[in-house]
View 1 (cartoon, rainbow over the protein chains, first blue to last red):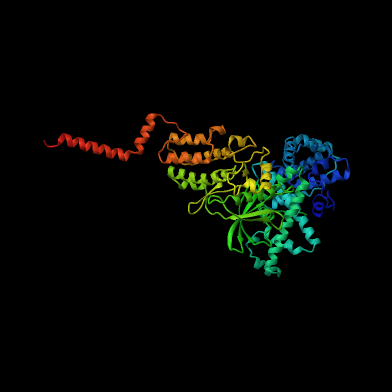
View 2 (view 1 turned 120 degrees about the vertical axis):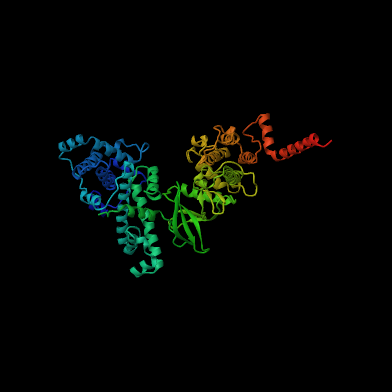
Length: 251
Length: 326
């Protein structure tokens, strides 16, 4: 994905997703390098911002230590077999990752020592500047409940990724106006206060087109969110629960 | 670069992604009313009949179609239960986004847990409870268990009508005594599916209102499980905002409805409501065996007007005998 490449440059321009329903964890354990790399890309793309923000907000770490810890976490995920110990029957992947982050931060000194010792480790090109800008630019109420905080940031990550994919797909289909309507109504502040007639005048289209374009954009957005979520979760059951949490319950 | 989404934008997008796609249908979205475990309920306008109805649609993904079967099964069950205390279903189908839905009467009123504070008298609350029992007994007669009876699922309409809502966990539990429209005979396919979808031992319901056997995940629930839930609702109605001591017969009725062992409970809703009606009428109740003295005292209380008249007559005659001029 383009968005992914700009944020992490890990996924490259690949737009593929695991073909099986819950192949993420299997993919990270695959003997095939390409499949393994693709699964790890998906995982990092979805989780790096939630992890970074979680360390900043919940653990109240400064910018630089939070960057180091985020890097260290994903290096461990890639090199130290952290995912090998994940059991989908015991917890959802999101919870497992958060608990692992907690463990890492609690052993911060040890982790810092390892980082120094392992200075030749390959650092992931994560765009911390944008993540930090999000923290500074807009007020985010720090949740007392770490699970809720992490879930909210995960939702922000999934929706952000899905939105970028939707934009790209609509551009390819020459449906930029559909995306603009979605942006206006469902992202911009105050968009919902506009009537369909006002929007129709603004874009020089019929009010019925506003209804239809918006419905189409929302339907496609929902489809992409579910596809992305399927690629980011470890089991079918987890996919269902995460989807219900994302779409059906107030975040 | 992914754009940053504020909390409010996140919420709007979530609603946008979950809202039902009504393009090309007769319905127009008005508002979201609530969210259940399986689906969301929306207020929509039926543009053909120019009225507002409630539309229920699955929220999450449904790759294996189980949610679809359950939602349509729920709609079919409610549609068959034509009773003034059960919300009527108007329409069912599949939306352009592929999600199944059904529409039903839009109920405007208060939930029982909100309404109860406005009912001060215990006897009025008990009469309200009797009206909750009616649709549940009706559903049982058609072989349908509700499985999630609780104050939040009881609506009291603006004219005092009582409606038992949210049949999303309902289950067909036995043969219907009615031969003209039995749910599990006239429509064996979906009913059979319903059994398999809900009879695999999964725990569904609400803690505090679920029967012990439902909490354990027993697959072979029957009407006595709903009777336990009705007992919990009775307990709620008796205790909320009431500091007075509860009469022993009433306490016994509640205790029998909520007995741990289903065999020790009322076996039908009718038995429960009859006992409660007897209590309201000052009659003996089956859940509270009385001694001869208590029974005599109850008889005196119930006939106190006649007894007082008789005593007054006897007293007058006695006085006349003693003070009559000789």
